[in-house]
Amino acid sequence: MEEGILVDADTAVPLGMVLTELVTNAVKYAFPAPRAGAITAHARRRQCGRVELVIQDDGVGASEFREGALGFGLVRSLVQQIKGEIDIRSEAGVTVTITFPDALQPAA
Image (cartoon, rainbow, N blue to C red; front, side, top):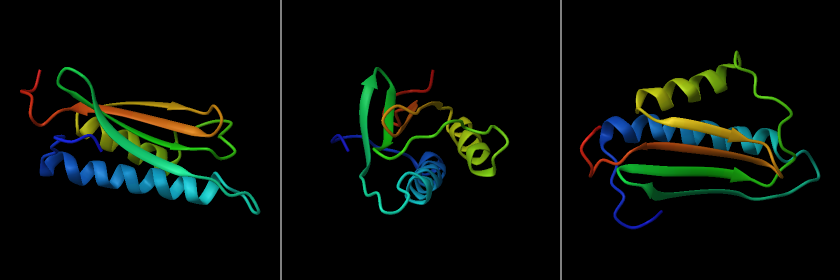
């Protein structure tokens, strides 16, 4: 995590749930036996007043993201709760990028 990024409690709880869900999904689906790989997460300020959280694995990727899937719906709902945006890509694994307001910046 980049130094100086602060997250208030109203953001930390849903963000923790999102991170847990995404890492759990990567552990369960990205690396079918006997494949091994890596899962990374990092946060940084990307643009004025916004924080970017990227969760990435180098697994098998995903052919589709089912809108009706419980985990996917939960993640989308929690990201909306923190006034964030989510981008999911499946290229050489899965990369999920979430941007949300920086607690140090006034809300827009």
